[in-house]
Length: 471
Image 1 (cartoon, rainbow, N blue to C red):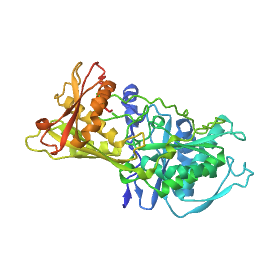
Image 2 (cartoon, helix red, strand yellow):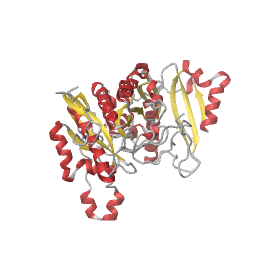
Image 3 (spheres, helix red, strand yellow):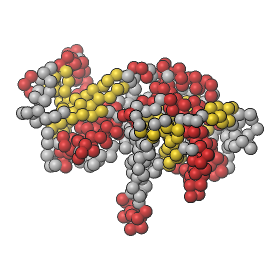
Image 4 (cartoon, rainbow, N blue to C red):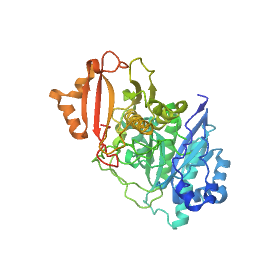
């Protein structure tokens, strides 16, 4: 791979919104800038992403970019501060630098070398890792400068960074061995945060790694974790991100499934939240916070348990073009946002539908499913395309929408359950009419041994409250 496309993410919605432009007149329009172009990662380079609270970002950048320029000159790294995202109190600092040459730096427990009388600890780092540590130190400096405080002995600071889901296994290790080793050797608390704590500036397919502890412990863990990420770059599909990630903001327990495609009035509602209680979100250089005692529930996932997850969605010939987009733009965007592979089969004579195959390699124990996310987003887009063409009454009160999936005949029993218990429970939980369709009612675009699973739901409000079709 000559050039990685772990691009610095295209901004979702920066603060220069249309509403602001209208309010402030032409001057605001002139100030509005398009998202910066993607920042490609050349061969032999690594990309790391640090999260910084918006209140500290100015101090990291410096007047006219003076401070970040120093970091660039001293480390050789490309450093970019991504655009702010509406309703997000964090911004992404993207660091791109060569993996070599390595150098030795000394990690200290104080704000700077002059103030710290401890001997510190020497570690070998790449230019990207050095810039990573330097920027984190600067965030602590800014907090001390603005608030006039610094953690007392035993006080905790925190650091949050983004990693692609495909990289998390390298941080956790088999049975959680690597993350436990990092915790033990650094003395820091390290957690992979649950999806509901993923900030809006992140991509679908990203996860947050949070480090808590004293200053030296956090720095040591930061070096160890960044080394894991450096040695295990994102797989190609997960690397597509770019000025803000193309993904949508994640809210609730699962990723938001209907994101920012054209006509956001989705007919699909986000899944119900989980009853699992997680630790509260912690700000970056927060002082004297109690450290979470629980062991991260994600740390025991085995990255070697990856398996192929495949869904086959039926889409009307009339709306499939709206899913593909001109030149494939929409389907590529959906792939980038979800991390799944989406392919649209050719049309079949005498068939009114086409098969859209959605697949991804997933850990069955993970709470986030790229394939499931993608199948709901593709369905949502197909409904929106129908509304745009005036073919679908789904936008009207009392109208019904339906989704049709192909399932191999041998798998139908898993959906039915003994005496139909499973399908009855799904009907009850989702409020949808679910049918298994076989025989001559199966479309000609299906395979010989396929049957159709069809969900149908009545839209019961003007707000498109159509129930949960994602179960």
